[in-house]
Image (cartoon, rainbow, N blue to C red; front, side):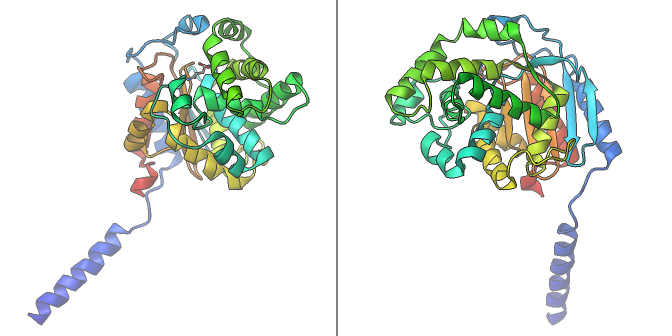
Length: 334
Ligand code: GLN
């Protein structure tokens, strides 16, 4: 009987040691191969529909599809139209949040803007009313317009220059506004103006609500490629250091906070569904881009304009989920 017990204990120890083996790390060639596989697998998937509440977005080629992964050392793995540009839309919210957090600190963001999910669509007005005038988080439109309003600046021009320069520093190149999208969205942004006015009534805005909405609209019209988005997200993955320029873009202590907000509200009212599938902080935009971050390792970006009912790119979600699964990138599975 004693021997049986000994064998049993040995099995437990050995089994445990095997189970706790060093985590699998994908090689460069494996990453390159999986990116190509994801591209081929979803190239002809035509699910979803371009956003059309902003007219210029409805006209973007729905076939556009690009995947880019950038690692902490600046290595690049890509497939498809990686240099083709779309408007960044809501993905810009991540970078303006980073700017405001750097200027005002993470407590300010939590107390003033909020870091909780709304469970409601990204442009919800009811959500503000339900939460006593709070925008809830910096990634719904309300919280994003509020965040933009808190960028420290003497005037609108300076606010815009800082936001544009900040996104360019994340991307390691000078980004430009897509003027056509900007004009189109300016003429379609009455709802966002209403949201900003409502927040002003609740004493939440840092600058004039209509001015902040205009700057926010411009920030959403910034033109980026999948390659740019991957560099931008890899900077967050790499503790705030841009892996291309090696400059510290935001303090390292803030990147976990930004990722936490991405995990909570990055894919809007489907943020939980996304986290359940991939375990990764991510952010989508109605231009068709999604970024996902593997903390300490990679920025992943996919661009494909057709969206699902939540406003998240259909193919981008599938391609990222495939890469995460194949390369074992879900941090909860480590
Ligand atoms: N500019 C868009 C808007 O304000 C951004 C929305 C999004 O990408 N989800 O509606």
